[in-house]
Length: 46
Image (cartoon, rainbow, N blue to C red; front, top):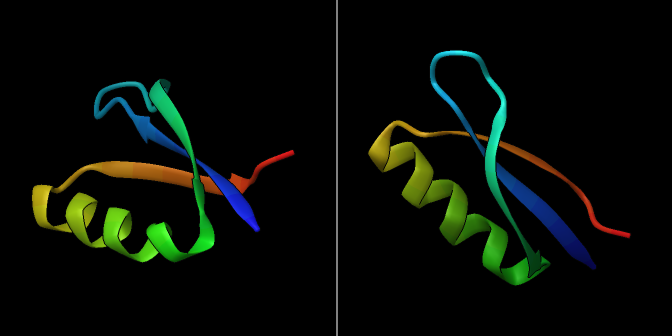
């Protein structure tokens, strides 16, 4: 399964950029975002 991960702007919550990854890569991206204090939005990719 593939997921789209969007990095969100801290001020207004709008998507700054996005990437589509396989399920096995999601955990690493979530851990990295948490370490950096980034806000992200994850949803299944079409």
